[in-house]
Length: 312
Picture (cartoon, rainbow, N blue to C red):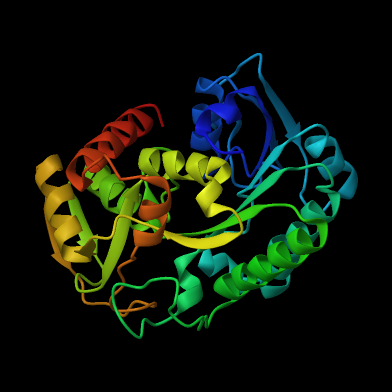
């Protein structure tokens, strides 16, 4: 597989397809002409996120169920594994469930992926832990310190082991903070936006931490590249905007676009104080570049939340 055009004629399985990232990926694949099998247990994803198509098959089921997984993977040439217990707080609260879904679920998928020709596994930059240097690239030590990132590290090693044994090409993508329409309200950007719209003001816990934010449309184009690029075969790569944004700067932009004020409540937050991703390897091997600025991405996300809250 060497070009995105190849995906147009493929049967593709997307796990976690009804979630934020998975549903946008399904949209992109369908627009390319691909046939998509969307696997989701709808524990957090929504059927409303999946746009009906005669080339879309929805299978409701769990990635830990071998029979369901075998059905979803039948005839699929590409597997995008997006399904996970993805909220770090939820993983902290139920470590056993996080291990079962994120590790055992991944193992079940891999054991059933007998005829798949490419696997793309969604990991996370949280596997790096507290950064030792910035921007963080793929040579940075793995130093995860929470259940969610630990399960992602285990998932990465499972992908490598199974794919090596089966000689199946893979690409592991370590995502930065992706945002946009359909993201749930328990993440930073939708929290700021929903506060501004519904309350007319924004309260942020701590304005000083920095992160790297990438619009979902740009991320999805990168995922497609991850499945079709020869240069990314059997590689683990970072994905992000490469721009370090302080939480207070984010609040500035959102509040200005909504015409509201914001305040810093100076509460203690978890996670690294600073983080910015270095997606240089991904860019050099694919030619991919993010095309949506933070302001434009936030404008698209604000428009989505205005519509959503108007009908809630």
